[in-house]
Length: 146
View 1 (cartoon, rainbow, N blue to C red):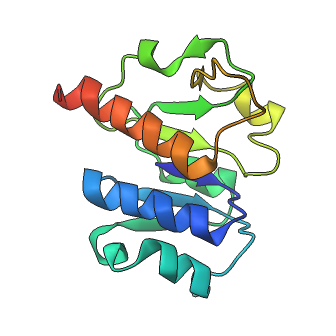
View 2 (cartoon, rainbow, N blue to C red; view 1 turned 180 degrees about the horizontal axis):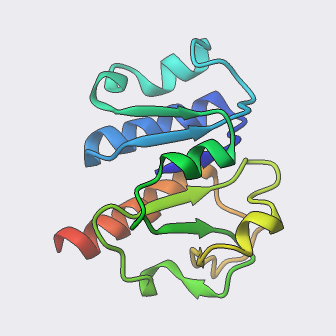
View 3 (cartoon, helix red, strand yellow; view 1 turned 135 degrees about the horizontal axis):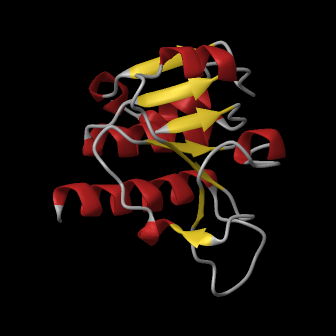
């Protein structure tokens, strides 16, 4: 799971909890809109942080440099046309989400395969933690066959 410039401590804490229960690593790409010692982050993550391998990256370039050569990064955006259920996830894939207030920038989306979550009822977007959880569980379903 990868969060690009996350803004809300509570959302990141909840994504970390999802990573803990799924056994997934969490990559955070700076800058953040909060501090990792923030009370809201600690409250949301509860005692699950010990079960998460957390990677911090100074920026997008630093994150890319840390990726293995065969890595596939899937960007999630409300602007995408392909549903996340059609991705064909594989072990080792990275699921990338943008900041809560603006999503992933165009320059980043254009260079990656981009997926969307269905929103049949409308609305601008899902909450970051909800979207990340839905995507992570679909990836797990495809990979592990739950």
